[in-house]
Length: 229
Image (cartoon, rainbow, N blue to C red; front, side, top):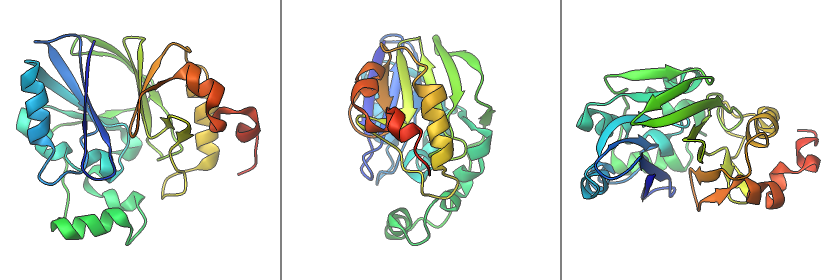
């Protein structure tokens, strides 16, 4: 596997580039907020390894993960895949953010007044088994951070976790469409059921493993999962 990360300027979002090897097709995950667009830095990484992007995967609809999806998708002529429950957030991201919050302030500073979907958007439903860019991909609906949050298991080796699971933490659940109760169900049913050997590629921060988080993450303990919201 070839795995590269281009970290967005704002919020430190990991934009992952994944391929079977150099010179192969690749997928791009969660192109975030950069000024100018993160597209140029993605192109540099793609060209360095002679890759051909064929799809963009969005783990959820928050702006720090979707901001650059339009220029990247249109720049390469590729589709964006997102869970059906978060699709509307591509063109209306403020519906899942706190009015007047940091993201809105950044948009004002950047002079951004509106958003639009790429030409081709593919809706996911959370139970698909796909093969794209030669990579077997299992799609799991993982609500809690947003209603349409999704994690992806690649090649039975890697978990693209978005903002569901971080090293030592989880994504917040207090934003619009988030739910602490749903997050606990996701952690119990979709995360703790995974193999310990899976390497976690999170939306922010460092790589980790399911085994490490099972042992050390306070949000994966029975005490937290059984606590009242």
